[in-house]
Amino acid sequence: RLGIGRHGSSAQRALRACRRMARPTAAENGTPAPPTRDAAIDVLRGWAIIGVVVIHACGLILPAQAYFSAAYYFRWAVPVFICAYAYFAARPPAPGQTAAVIAGRYARLLWPFLFYSVLYAVVLGDARAPDPLATLWRYLRGDGWAGQYFFLILFQLVVLLPWLAGRRIPLAAVALSLAGLVVLLALLPAAWQASPALTAASDRLVVYWLPYALLGIYLRQNRERWLALLARMPRGLALAAWLACPLWLSFTYDPDWPTGPYLLPGVVAVSAAVFVLHPRALDGRSQARWAQPLAGLGRHSLVVFCLNPLCVWALQQTVLATPPAALPFAAAVVLAALLVVAICALCWAAGWLMRRAGWEAVAG
Image (spheres, rainbow, N blue to C red):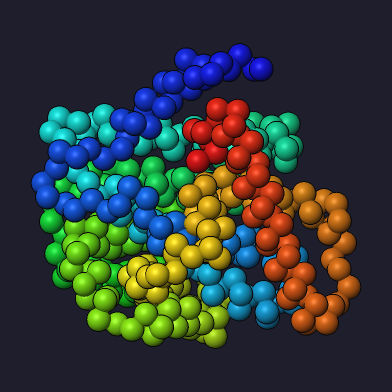
């Protein structure tokens, strides 16, 4: 059985040790700890990973205008993943443990990055490309497969998070960073067209994502106050605002924006609102039976994030190699929704099998 015993191979035991080492310690300076399992964030991440699959897959079925509206509705998904990552990494390491925590977090990221990069290189045929150095460079800069860029962003943030978590982040710093990002993104197209280096770096530079990390850390450090303020808002209103605010992106999207969809100024405000509102919007709902599939996806969003582009590629090579004939709009919406559900279920099942085999390090 692949040499894996009841407790896993020595390599897997080492990976588990790295994962334990990467977890924030309890010896810190008063930052409040959220529950061991935050049901609302699980549901939020489940909804976000569905959005990622919508972005990658629905263009195979939906007409262009409907696809762009749906895809831009979910452009908050990746920024919210950054907020959530920083939120759970906001507990400062114990004295003298900073390097160990950074190393452990790098290990947790490096294994899936390498595993899925090799998988895509083999399946897509890039491993047989005539110029292996050019292919390697393309993969190292995050252009090998959809979603690879996310690891590059986290590789940069991992170094900064322990330092940030050890400081009290003032609300003014968060507000200024988010407002500054909006201004930067509004001015960026002019510099983008004049700077090949900026264009080559694309949306991977940490400066575009650091404000989301600051928001996550601030809300973790001020968790009780945050939840108390949200409690003044009616739950129904919070849910309506939470679901409605991304519609702004659906109605105002610009598919020709030169810097890419995640670097639209409007994405900043919508992403922040979705993360800030989610505890109240999901209050009393995240434990409901209907929310459990979303929470399950959220707990294991890594494998869905990494495998869904492979599912889309497989469809493009087989049953959807020829674009489907024009369908009635309602039928196209239903078919696209079924496709998203099928891809999420297939990726989740693949992750379940990987975890059963002891591959938790790459299955999440």
